[in-house]
Length: 350
Ligand code: AMP
Ligand code: MG
Image (cartoon, rainbow, N blue to C red; front, side, top):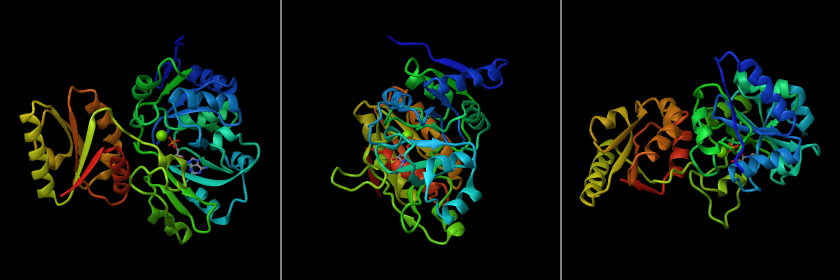
C-alpha cells in the first residue's frame, strides 16, 4: 500500500519542526529527501543496513551501486574511514563543505549495503544549511544518492523528488531549487594518484592545483558489460528521459544545419520535436518545444538547467529531444557534457 510522504517547505512556519521530525525519521530508520548544493539526496542512516535498503528499494537502484555518505563534521570522517592520506585531508580542508566526494578506505562500521560490498566508502560534507542541520540533528552520517528513480534525470527541485518518489519515502525537505544542479565530483583517494571517477563543478584542474597530480578515470558514456568499472555507477544508464534524445556536437554552423534538417525530417513524418539549446542557437533553430541551456559561454547555467530541462521536455507530447552541443566545454562544461552524453541515445558529430 502507498503510504503518505510528508513534505516540509523551507520558509513555512512549521519548517523548524519539520526538520526535527525529519531527523527523528532518520534516527528511527526511515528515509528523507533533502536539498544539497548539487542535487536533492535521498537519505537514510548510513550505519543501519535496514534503513539503507529502503533507499535502494525506493529508487530501484542496483544493489552493487554504492551510496555517498554525507557528514557534517571531521569526527564523522574518522568514524567511517581509515588510512586517510595527507592529500585527502588537504582536499577536505580546501573543498569541504562542498561538491567533492572522496573515496576512502572504509572502516568495518560501514555496512556492506552502503558501500555496495566494496571496501571503500565515498564521503562528502555538503554545503547546504538544511542538509547539514539534518545530519547534525539526526546525529549520524546520512547515506544519500540522488533522490530520483534510478536511471532518470537527477532531481534539482523538491517537485522532481515528489514526482519520482511520492508514497515511496517518508519525507521531503523542500529547500528550493539546488544551486549547482549537477552531482558532486567523485575522486578516488585510495589509488596511488587521485583519480576523478565522476566530473563535477570542482574540476580535475582544481584538484591538480591542490594536490599536484590527478588522473581521469571516467568515460562520457555508459560502460559495456565486459569493461571494468572503477565506480559501479559507470555501468548503469543515467539521466535518461523516456523520450529519445539526440546530442549534436561540432562547429556551431554545422550543428545548427543538422538540427534544422532533423526537425524538418521529423515534421515530414508528423513527429513533434523539442530542442534543448543555448540562447544563441534558439535564435536560429526552431522546433515545437524549446528549453534554454543558457548562454553558450556560461556552462554553469546549463548545469543548473540540464536535469530540469530534460524533465520538462520529457513531459511534453514530443517524439524527440535534440540537444545542442555548441555549449562551451570549459570548467563545469566538462561535467555538463558528461551528463548530456550519457543521457543521449545517440550522439551525432558533424
Ligand atoms: P549518486 O549518489 O546517485 O550521485 O551516485 C553516487 C556515485 O558515486 C555513483 O556513481 C557511485 O558508483 C559512486 N560511488 C559511491 N561510492 C563509491 C565507492 N566507494 N567507490 C567508487 N564509486 C563510488
Ligand atoms: Mg544518481
